[in-house]
Amino acid sequence: MAAGSSPRPIDRLRTVVEELRRIGILSDPMASLLREWIDEVAGQVAAFATYGPEIQGRLHSKLKKSVLVLESVVADLASGKRIADSASERILRESLTRFLGGGTSIDLAIALSPVDYRGLRSAVWLNEGAAAFVLLLSPSVDFTRNPLLPRTVHEAAHAEASAHALVTHMDIFERWSGEALCDLLAAMIAGPAFYFSTTAVVELLGKERSRDSDFGHPSMATRAQLLRAVGPLLWPESPVAGIAIQALPDRTLVCKPNELRYEENLERRTTAQVATYQGLSTDKVVWEGAYLGGQEDAQGSALVALNMDFAANATRGRGT
Ligand SMILES: [Zn+2]
Image (cartoon, rainbow, N blue to C red):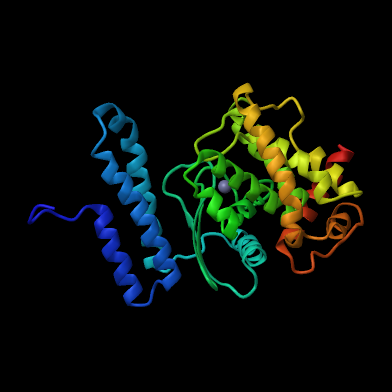
């Protein structure tokens, strides 16, 4: 940096985070999460300078938005704004406790994104016995209530250790399988509600965009197919599997031909993971109670309450 010039925004953020840590406003895990996030964006800023004008033109606004989001999260934390929505907080805390175990202390922040992303975003930092998690809510799409609230459970699954390693992997297929694993873990603890929310995402995107995959995610069409495949394994010999599969988009939603080979691989891998993670799964009796048994009490579980809400809507829907 030339003498006398002002520090770049990203360097200024580093200084702010260290100061907030020093005066105790940020915990060690949250400061570590922000340092990693800053390093990532700083890496993108450094790489930007090496590109030609055409690529720079395409990346410029994306990079500016990344810096803007980070600045906003840090500013919120600095001013004590930590939880932008309490329903999301209940779902996140319950989900993270399930995925990380009760012995892990979790520093949580839920912020409203200043950039109009149409989906949820999250950042995770993990260590033995401690974790930090930031959830970014969309300013234009309401993920804080049904039918989209269960998407928060997928974001929480990013914090599960093996899923975290996969979704941050360099290889695209490993990342895709990490996203598929997060969907599986979300289905295990959020039950049919996660299936209902998958259809809500497809309705939000529209059928054609639901067939698009990207660098980080398989298409929603493939993700729906994977959920269809694991349903009978998650809830064997239970009507819950049928209720969940019925809640998915119908079979006319299919991935593009060039994704099919990956979909088949993902399906093999994801169905094999059901047994590995079985210990995390909620007993099917709970979902039977919510959807069939006229259960009236969620027994303190925000995840069960989500399902009771979908069950009540399905019952109302039948009459009309
Ligand atoms: Zn994800």
